[in-house]
Image (cartoon, rainbow, N blue to C red; front, side, top):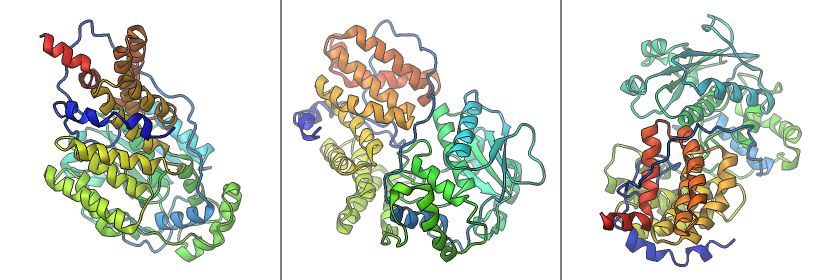
Length: 474
C-alpha cells in the first residue's frame, strides 16, 4: 500500500494538533502526540494482563557476506569503538541463577528466553535454583530497585558486568580493571543488573539484551535493521539474526582467545551450515562504518542531559550527516525519526515531515517492518487528532501483525487504543469497547501499574475530536 494515500489529508492535522502536542523523552516504543487527558464516564475496569505465547522470531533476510562483516564488528569492538584483541566467551554449559526480589512475570520470561537460547542458538544454558556456586560458568541475574541502580549508574536502564556475582561485588569492584571486558581471556562469570520495579516488558527487554551480551558480542551497531545489538531500541526481543549471531559466537569451531583473522577464516563455513539461504560469505561485504560524529549526535539527541533545543540541533546534525553520507538504511531512518519525535513539542511541521521521511526509508526495503510500525503509530496519532478515522485505521491495521510478532506490548496497546478511538469516531462503539479492553490487557504488560495504563488510555483518548467536544461541553 502506498504511504502517500493515507497521508494526503494529514497536513490539516498539524493545525489542530498544535494545541495537543507534547513530547515524551522515552524510547521509540510509546511516544506520541500528547494532550491533556479528558475523563469519559463509565471507565472500564482493567482486564487481566495479556502475555505473548510462543515466539515467532523475525527471519534472517540479509546475505551471509553482510552477516560475516557485522559479526566481526560486533565481536571485536566495544560500543566505545575500542578494539577487542581476542574473542571471549563461556566455554561449556552455563548456569543462570536469579537473585533479589523477582517480579511476578520475570520467572516465566527467563525460562522462555533460556528455552529459545537452547533451541535457536544451540547454547547449553540452564536456569538453576539457589545461590551461584563459587566456580563454573555462571550468569547471575540480580533484581534490585531502580533507585539503587541509578544512584551508581544513573543513565543505565540495565547492564551486565563480568567477573562478579552480585550487586555488592560490583559496587566493590566498579572502579577497578576487574570489570574491564577487554582484559578477559575467557568468560566464567557475569552478572546482569535489572530493576525490579519497572514494567514487565522493560524487565523482559533487559533480560534479552543483557543476557545476550553476557553470552555473545559486546558491541552495538546502528546500521543493523534486525537486531537488539543496536542502540535504536526498536527491537524488544532477540530476533532471528540475533539468535544466528549467538549460535555462531558459541559454535564449537570457535574458541576463546581466537583473533579476528582466525574467526574470519572460519565464518564462511559456519554461515554456510547455519544459514544456507544466505549465499557465500567467502568474501565479506564492504566495510560500512558509522562515523563517530553521527553517533555522538544521536547520543546527544536521545540523552537526558541536554536542553530540548540542543537535542533537536543534535538530531538535525545526525540527519545532515546521514544525507551527506548518502545513507538510505536504518541509520538514515532513525535520524529522521529522532528529529521528528523531538519536534513534537513545538514544530509539528518538522515532526510530520520527519516521520514521513522515516516511513519512506523504512518501507523501502524488507527487514525494517518494526521500524515502519513505530512510524505508523505516530502518523495514526496525527490522523486521529485530525478526525480522520479511516486513515487512522489504515496506519494501525497494517502494523498490528508486525508488532504482535515482535512482541512489543507497549506499542501494540498504543496502536489498539488509537484503533478504538477511530472506531468511536465511526460510530462503532461496541467494537471500540472490545478493542480498548484488549488493549488495556496488553498495556498492563507493556506499561505496568494501573496508573500508567489509565494514563496512556487517557492520553490517546485526548487526541480524538471527541475530547475537544467533551471539553467544550464542560
